[in-house]
Picture 1 (cartoon, rainbow, N blue to C red):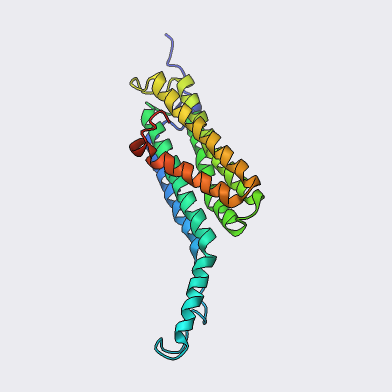
Picture 2: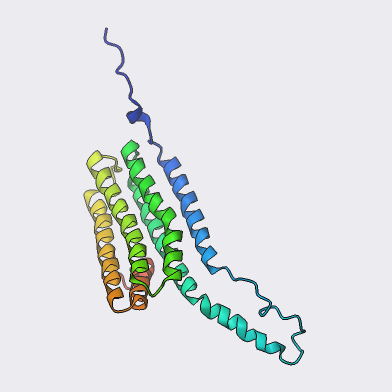
Length: 225
């Protein structure tokens, strides 16, 4: 009589989509929260005058506050861009997970690598904010986006080949997800190239692409992307 086949660790590791989704939500939440650290305002005696506000000359200190806000402009800009970036990729990953019937060890590690890219976003954001006119800083930020998009694409391709998609997740549905990733990565790459002329132009284009990803299907009906 033949006994049951032995079960390998590989067969039982990383099979829970629910735990993967929960971990993803937590890491995205932490990364989005850490982004705001770049907006910290340093306390200064010039910002908080000892004289009452109605005293002569006290109103002049208000200009210091405006100077602080102007100095924070690059950080605020990159914060908005990165918050949108993480929001878009969170939606993309959750859309993928909803198409999977189950997971396995390899798919779980692909998404863990994706979450590594998510956790790097606060670093690349602060680097870009501090050196916003430097092409190298923008290139690092763009490579962070490339990492996120590439791993999301690899995850969908692997799930298709491994037969991990739900029965109602047709080939056309998976292809649409992959096509969207490729299209937007191409646009991000074009935005990075624009840094040759101006990093601000590059950031503005990337921000426009992100707005398109967030609201275009409702406003411009670009459903194919």
